[in-house]
Length: 213
Image (cartoon, rainbow, N blue to C red; front, side, top):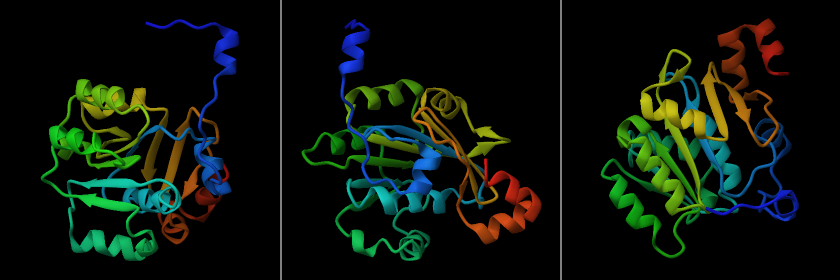
């Protein structure tokens, strides 16, 4: 237990993600280098495209491990890499497949120069408890964890995913190619993942309304 006062708290310095493009800063705010995010939504709504667009930005600076428990080293993963032009980031992003467990991930992340950003896709396939989630935070306080979750109605599916939603400083609900962001770092503007798809899903009138929020 460590207790500090107002002066000490205000004197603390935090490492911030530099040169975040305006459209991302407007949604996510001023990001610390180590943050936790949970993304959830129904299948086919734009979750994968959202995270790959974000990684296209972050992985120019930070190394990333994408734990692809659902799709693995598949053609669909290859298609996403090509669609988002990640080839120039060779060496900055690596993919782990469905064989990854909580224990093997911990061992991997303890290695020197392991990835700074860890994406878990998905929580339902990872089968971790909320206690294990907290262990990841405690073991690797300098890393960013991004969790992708299935949805049940408008909430993440399952007790662990829902508890992580309450704990995570960045919560992103994806529907109809729009990302609805709640961030403790500021921002909080809705993010358009795919404009044409979003206009078709929501209708032009509603799309124009929600894209400005």
